Image 1 (cartoon, rainbow, N blue to C red):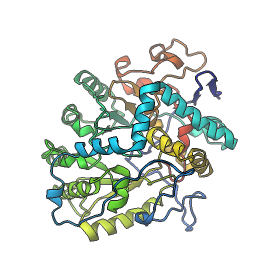
Image 2 (cartoon, helix red, strand yellow):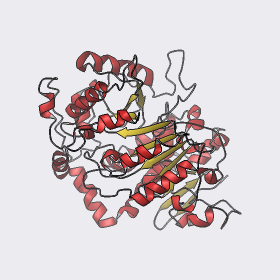
Image 3 (cartoon, rainbow, N blue to C red):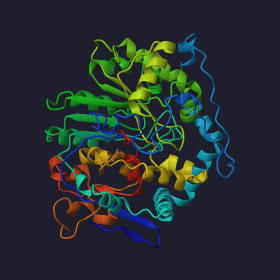
Amino acid sequence: KHPEVEAKGEGMIRQFVRAGSNAVLSRTSITRPLGSLSSNDGKPVTPDFNTTVNVADIRLSKPKPKSNTTSQNTGTWEGLKGLEERTKGSLIDATLKEMEDDDDFQLTAERLKTLGQKKMTQEERKNRRRALDNLGVPDFYTFLEKEKVANELKRSPSEILQLNIGLYCNQACSHCHVESSPKRSEMMDRKTSERCLTILKNSPSIHTLDITGGAPELNSEFRYLVTEARKIPHVKEIIDRCNLTVLTEPGQEDLAEFLAENEVKVVASLPCYSAKNVNQQRGKGVFDRSIQALRTLNSFGYGKQHGGGLTLDLVYNPLGAFLPPPQDALEEKYKEELMQTFGIEFNNLYTITNMPIKRFADFLFRRNELQEYMNLLVNNFNPGTVTGLMCTNTLNVSWDGTVYDCDFNQQLALGAGSYVPEGMEGKGLYAKSGGEDGKGVSVFDFESALELVDTEIVVDSHCFGCTAGMGSS
């Protein structure tokens, strides 16, 4: 048992848990099913896991209290006629214009300039912890102990190497937990990508390379990583976390062909089957471009239900502070809507719970909904999700080579190895992690993923997002 450590001055809260072996899934490790997490009697898995599959009808309520933010131009779907013409050129200029006109983006930019990223992250974690304190909820690991599932949170040999190769993106989505946009310049360089490939070669337990961002395809290392990873025999699957609109960007005309030739699995974001909701969450014109991209991927054999062999999976996340609908039912609805309206096919739909960090945390805090949302996550804790958390079998690496237990920890600067158990000071990788005051382990500190099996998994209050409902899968 590891007690929560709270530094009162800066308000920085650290919560950590133990490690071990077993596992599978999460928002960032979509490779195999979660298991028996669903109910067979028609009842919700957890109390609030009852969102309707008619997600196109869902609208955000007015903020509490009234906000000064302005609504985004949601637009309407204009049909397939003229689609190619409407999706020509880059989305970046339109994204930058929306960022300039959006009060929330401007407020965040001003706070970032004044406080800096580190202090903003500390403040965000304080707000989450304060919300849980008001609810009488203990730290995440203590909560797992009370639920008698703490011993199920164990690390196994890594099966997935996830690389966040950069934060640059042609979009600036309101829910983005990595705060990507065209204004971000962080990118993985060749030295770091080569090191990641070396670790991949030296880690036979890793069967999947999962590449994300930002828009990873806009990083110069993306195609190098894909082609080199394809040469490694034990790497059976390569995943591209795609925002879809990148396929319509100038210079990416051959992207779909490249992905198909290298048999890359595409996991694409599409938070609704209606233009209004997609454009509200992801930006003006995004729905048109997403539909055009999906049709392009279909033309290369992606998503075909019979034959083809190229996997195209979609990801849904809620528009606001509620849990996603049941995954199977929503997948059926998506397939019906996309086929009937646009003639689009795909393989699987995954639903993810919005994590209360970064832009979405700011969204909740400004609307005075953070405590309410944290209460929703806690009340819908599902013990069946614990063994499938991605931190148990995934090695996550940032653009600069720092290693994390998951993509969410990466955004909160909770580096792998940044918690040092009693008696392990200065031993093994802990000697290189810098301990609680350090960034954590770097890819330049070890040769194989197996060396991290005995490091403790780092957890914090945001982890309730991965254990609510069906999990953040």
